Image (cartoon, rainbow, N blue to C red; front, side):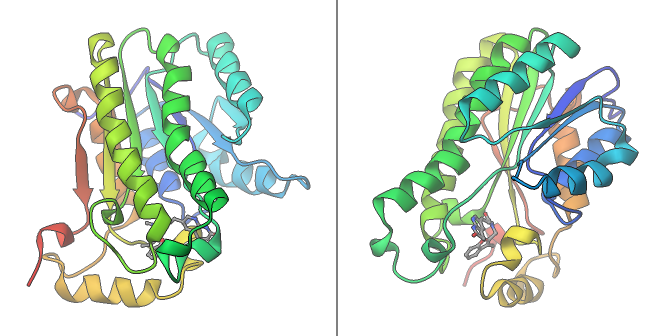
Amino acid sequence: MLDLKGKNALVTGIANNRSIAWGIAQQLHAAGANLGITYLPDERGKMEKKVAELVAPLNPSLFLPCNVQNDEQIQSTFETIRQKWGRIDILIHCLAFANKDDLSGDFSQTSRSGFATALDVSTYSLVQLSGAAKPLMTEGGSIITLSYLGAVRAIPNYNVMGVAKAGLEASVRYLASELGSQNIRVNAISAGPIRTLASSAVGGILDMIHHVEQVAPLRRTVTQIEVGNTAAFLASDLASGITGQVLYVDAGYEITGM
Ligand code: 0WE
């Protein structure tokens, strides 16, 4: 049923074994996809080594540096895809960054440069990667990004990232609208809070997780693998009628209120 054999999938955003992108990569691999993995390069090559060791069991046929703030790296990533694969079917966008001091305190004090950084890395990167993938998605495709409830609710301390995710969800709709005629679907998964490298750097994440465990319909949080399974579904032909959507994978938390 869920079959991704013969499909070429580029996965961005793996930093370690807690990354949501890692859960997605594993489930795309389990469904038979051919993987390309990108990582954020650093001067000492530490991230390259770490991510390479992690993803080795998934036998990626491409492993490339891609800092989305660097236009040449994006160009060269998709030039390599063109040469080695000829075509791409699935693009997984799991990238976000805001300065740590913009993820606490007063939102009204966000600096111009902090606002620009958050929206550049977390929002514009989806537009840019989609634009680069478009000419290579010659047999249709599926583009999937990761969002969070802070896009549509004011969640304490999420601040500028909430604005970035609101822009991301709007970008999903505009991209879906543009790319639909090429049979490229664009969707977001809005995941509930999960302990990852990014979220663990945030004060109070454990309290948020504890809260979700108390009040979410399923009385628990979700796992990276559950997000990965949803991504595999959205990437597959089983989801051929779904585009422009934000799908909540959050143990039902989003529907609750009192
Ligand atoms: O989107 C995210 C994480 C976004 C994020 C996290 C960091 C921490 C370290 C972006 N940039 C940075 N920059 C850093 O320097 N989440 C959905 C996880 C998250 O982040 C929060 C949350 C939750 C949940 C920030 C504040 C409040 C809740």
